[in-house]
Image (cartoon, helix red, strand yellow):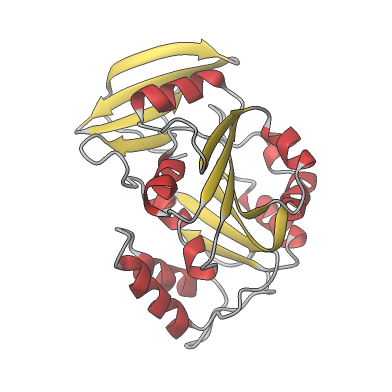
Length: 274
């Protein structure tokens, strides 16, 4: 979710489903998804529909810095499908499963945002993400949570039990990724809970001020958190991805415990200035 909408919204289409209104707007060549408000849930540049328009979606892809060989990614919440379709188009080794409870969102994502039909490495399932997580343990190598409604992140998706379940759903070397809003009054509460679920193996990545913050939780500490190693990895990734990985590494070093040589885990981030 991206909180600041364009000032000029036009060509709205509306439909009601699951007590939410799904809206689509276009402004300045960008098509946006809304859930009953001007808040942008997802955005797509019409001339480049598989690129990642919003900074936080590019930040989410930083899981590639920490885990090089990913075969399965599980996502709870489809929205406009920005990350899901990017992974499908640009990460041929990754099979994606996406759980979305609202059938209207699935319909709009496919008709308006170029989300592909299901195939052997891409599956959108209409269902309850909470139930799916409870039924699948040690299943995903990367677990992305980007589940917002018109009021923000649902309470069931930010409880201690939920984050514990996310950790259980990951394989032993899995990476948890969640998109949070930095100005949420409960941000520190959510971050503390994530730290508890992942034994402090957590990093935060602000992608705007005071906007979206991507939080990473690691089932096991990444093998190499030296900044020079991460920069080398970023340079390699930037050859095939139009994502500012090097800039994100500097943000990680700025907003997490670090030295001139490496990032550190197992130190609480709750008091860290975002």
